[in-house]
Image (cartoon, rainbow, N blue to C red; front, side):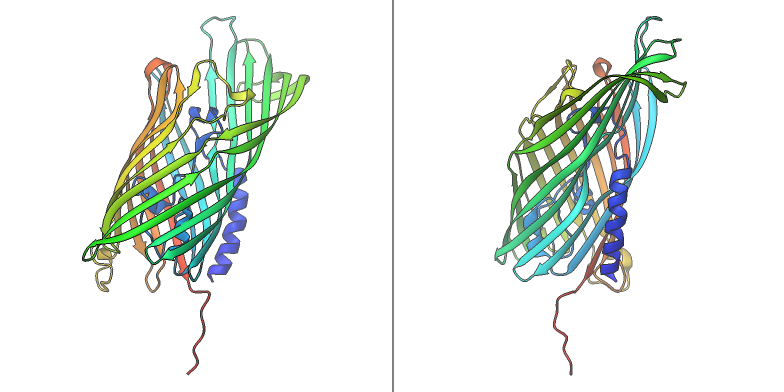
Length: 416
């Protein structure tokens, strides 16, 4: 049954990853868009914590974790996000529903393999800028698209409590940007359209270690390293004379200029490490830190004189608690209760203000009766940006759902 689910989900996910708009943030204009994937829902519900060697849940962030999987595991997740965007004088609301990831893990003794597909970044904004001068130029800027990631991971058990791993990732996608410039009362304007086709490979290496420190209490640690990589960007720019209506739908009158440019973007190296303590299938608490150098992700179409880029860093604190994993009569005691805090410095600096992201998370792991599979529900409330210096502050609420389905594919049948 799980095989049929995987085939159907892969087909559906491939269609949705191209069709959906995963962002409603004006900050998705910068670089290659807003970062979409922040871990599986189980990890995100703990603020991004991913330090435990789990035999039932996939951890896409650390390839070493695939060595700990004991059953063929399929996971898929999605979310609904409502965002309130405000400046000093205006306020708007936006909603979006998106798929977050799809992955499969296969245990092969000391080796575990995994593969999957996920939207990595998203661009999605619609901004209207009006001049105070009646004869001045106004602008309507729109952006769509993003970067997807297909990956193949391999984990290996060196000793029972130490696992290492690596994965290869192929990044691909298209980003569309347009800027309509017009004067109020004049039915003809000028529009610049940019289309960037992106592709490239990245690698990721990881390790996880577990050590018993007291009776049933373990010490957990996790480490990942992503080296610097290149992302090829094939850009096509078209400047046209257009007419437009009240909804700013445009019709091209004449293409004034067309140009194609190929550039190489740089995804900077990244390192993460975390540690914590806990008892397997009972409780865990820990912290995670991620650091990333400054890259070269701005292209010709999204450079801005008031924008600079700094180093990225992220800090998480979280954990989980299970009242009684082995109880049969009281379902709520088998539920996994997760919670966490997060703080992220995105590295984007606009008008000398660094854009930070902070939030609180809550989650529930709901066992599916008669199996080792489970459904996960997560809630997240956060804030990104600021209203200082004419910028936009985003207050967002996310409701997310994922499924982790487990089955045994490789085993010898015993006949009495």
